[in-house]
Image: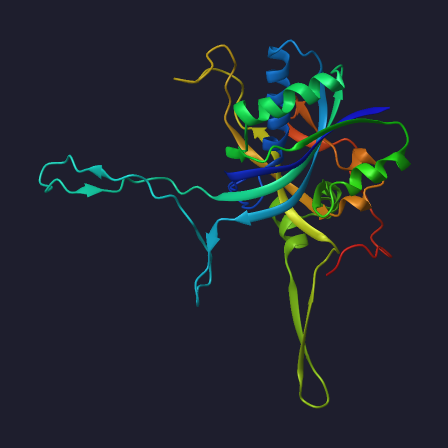
Length: 309
């Protein structure tokens, strides 16, 4: 039996959209699992004992803050207007100037979170979670705004009891993992970035009919709405100490982002809740700190009619 808490229709402004050095869009899965872990810590601090085991996310709306003008080939990030500051260097007239800043990709989101938990009392969750989210929490660096989400706690024993729960998150798109596609391509000799691009690229082909008309067709290697998704980090150096590190008691190491393939699917297509729930997995031997699904979705490569080209 699974104990689940649904946070329905959470509205977030200015969430971090730069999920890795290679990807822009919805926040990384580490941000989603981090929100779950932060919520657990706030509850435990209030003597509400228990833990969250895994989390699933459904996106209802995502507005990436970019702009593409007429004739532009690439879109530009819409930045913030920082306050003017007076010039202090010698030789300047004293007029104010705008300070330099690092571009930050942002997005506005409406999303739902489904969290599996152990030990918590459902009534205590209903009493504390809305107030904690409203007063103490952010999501991927973004501000959570009113109206507050509806908190629903339920228990599921059989898979056919998922239907009502999943339909309550419609319309929306659930992010699931498709790492098996990457593994398949890399087994055939591709490196990681080539395997990723192999499933993301769109191939355009033109054909001329007997009347001289040109028709274009566009295809992808795999059906479905496949996207790159940042799922964690891989350590590059041995754990140790670094100058001016924030926490002097915790070993420090340099790391790089881990990016794999994910897919957006409608919640009603989920037959097993473990296909949408993510959890932490750390493997010190492999230097990995990642989020992965309880039970990844796998499909037959032939005869699968889900998704579109």
